[in-house]
Image 1 (cartoon, helix red, strand yellow):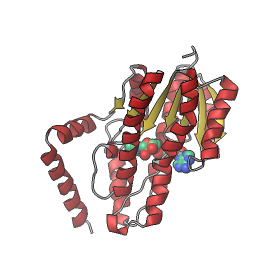
Image 2: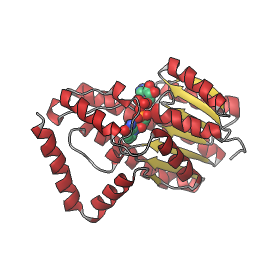
Image 3: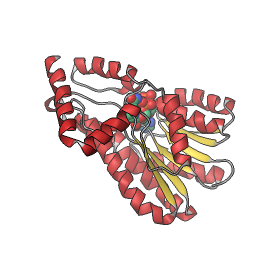
Length: 269
Ligand SMILES: NC(=O)c1ccc[n+]([C@@H]2O[C@H](COP(=O)([O-])OP(=O)(O)OC[C@H]3O[C@@H](n4cnc5c(N)ncnc54)[C@H](O)[C@@H]3O)[C@@H](O)[C@H]2O)c1
């Protein structure tokens, strides 16, 4: 890596992406900020500079391969390469399985799963040429556990975990690190993107976002630490870590917990 780290973050205009950008900016990094929200992106660019970093702003919709390729090209052109690429852009979707339409599924998978595939596809050739680089994929605890009422989100995030594990094995021989981040719920602007056919789901998601004992800034700190330490799996929430252990060591107990959540959702309708 060069002395000044060069990092690109998708979905950098808000929430966790913004905090990741600021965390690296405080360490003096050059930060490429990519998002569909140009107005918020401009504000974050000012914050990055105020925090001690340099900002490169790139309008980028992760649904469009050309936009994601252009982001990586801009970093190569401006900085001669890239050290870290963070696939962070994402949206929220939920609702009882039978109410979700094909369109709901396609919308969510296109952004939360295919967006990550496009990010990886754009940056891996550059990382291979450099023989270095860190690919950070923001998945979710929903990629390790599968709570009822959020099937499309769970499937997308499980796909991100699986892709991350695959690339971890595939890219390690080329000196490329993969870090897969699986946070539980935490407060951001994620509810602005929520698509759900169930009004009750909106309220319960909103409550869940407030249930976190750590903030987006704490999670960005944890990601920074785990990336520096070369860790594959980053589990920022203590409750998430213990739920993940439960699933692996006591699968029947995990399944019973999921049924309890399903029963409480069913009672609310
Ligand atoms: N907040 C949580 O509880 C939580 C929990 C686990 C994982 N995550 C994941 O963290 C990531 C960041 O979400 P957040 O909570 O900070 O939400 P957020 O809504 O605050 O930020 C998401 C950003 O992604 C951008 N975005 C949405 N669609 C895009 C697209 N097509 N192309 C480019 N940018 C796009 C939005 O404009 C926004 O700036 C997501 O992948 C999300 O799934 C969030």
